[in-house]
Image 1 (cartoon, one colour):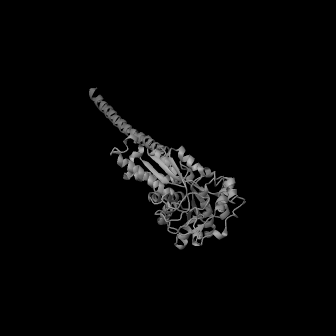
Image 2: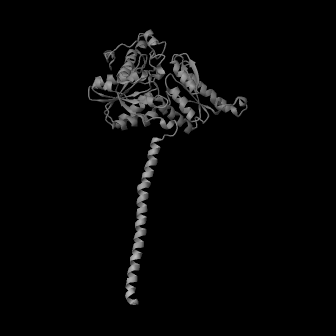
Length: 419
């Protein structure tokens, strides 16, 4: 009786042992499956969160979308795309430049946290620097030409920047707004050096932590912001399917950085300049000389920029612009820029600033040159919000004979085509 039960007990024991092993094995596999399945899902959720939740102001800058400008695309038979830089938190393409300049200056020790960053700006760079400086715990000073739109000074002051409005003079004059900004940085740096000598201890402030001149025209951080950021974004957003890029230039950083990067990646594409009145860059690109038509006739412009547009056009060759890789240039007029801004608002609902409007004039020039079926990209630098007192002021435009009246694109002058 006992002997007959032994095999049964052994069999049952073996079965129990096998079941136990199977349970733990399958349990571990199941645990691994759950961890792999839901752990990966958790990791992906965290990665997605990092992509959607930005860190501070700086995290919001860049990666702006490309927008198809339907009215211009339909009118030209080309795909006209605008890089919507007006969607940056500071409202312009200059946010990218401000971040790059400040990051590099802090990394090199040229600027210290709590220090003063200075700039001479007739465009949007001052606004961008004021915002980004605050994000990095720095102070900001901007020298601004007194003929710039008043709202720019008001925005700067609201952002906490110190603003000094000065009369427009030649860059060679010691009181040119850029030279004044350079001087203010030097003065702040002197206060820092004197701090330990007891010469300024009673009035010690953040300025005693030193000053740094942003120097947007000559500082190649400007170029790098677009070579490393804007250009690669355009390439990725178009999947490399683009035929031309066109933009105006002030400092030259945008057109140089973007043109250099894109031409390295797409050697056969074309890059062009659109130049406003009073600027010498058209002649530089097409003839290799730096003078305007008026200056060639023996006249000197009272205002070097002599145009309703702001932030673009220049009569000297900057270190940034020297790096641009261009295939040609077009002239643009004030009337074309004003009419284009109204055309875009009426047809597309796009409320653009003066440089954005001039850039769009450039896209039509390129489209007419290349013919239908091409993809052309430009930069929508800023919106019209900072241009209400001049570029979008009916009274100001009437005083200068620039009241818009065109219904279509007939305002684009054939005489301004590339030469």
